[in-house]
Image 1 (cartoon, rainbow, N blue to C red):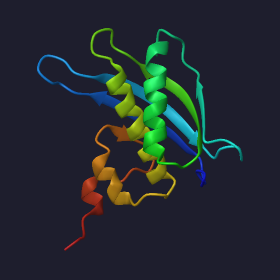
Image 2 (spheres, rainbow, N blue to C red):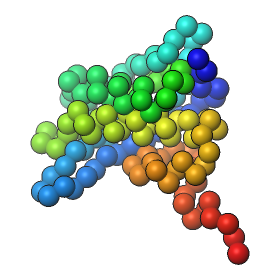
Image 3 (cartoon, helix red, strand yellow):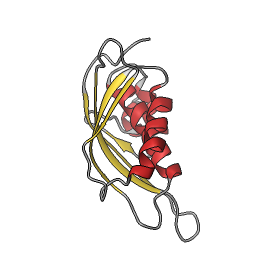
Length: 136
C-alpha cells in the first residue's frame, strides 16, 4: 500500500446542501501527513464533543477511507462544526470523502483536474477550474 508522500495542511470541507428546506451539513478542517509504516489510516480527533459529536466520527472516518482510495495517511482533525438539525452521518461521509480526495490532489497523487469534482473542499494551492482551462 502506498502512503501519502507529503504533508497537506488545512484541508477544509464545508458540506452545505439545501434540498427543500434543509439538507446535510458538515464542516471539518484536517491536516494530512505521511503515515507510520504499518498504518492504513491514523485518525486523531482534536475536537471537543460540542464541535463534533461522537456519533458522526465513524461516518467521517468511513468517508476518509473511501476518499483516500487505499492510500495510507495520518489525519488530524483540527476544527469542525455541526448543526443541531441539518448535520447527519451522510454529510460527514461526504466531508470525509472530499477531504481525502483533496489531500490526494494536494500531494500530487491525483491530477489537478480532480479539483472540479471537489465542490466543497479547499486547501492551500488548490487550482480553480478557470486556471485549468487552456489559454487561447
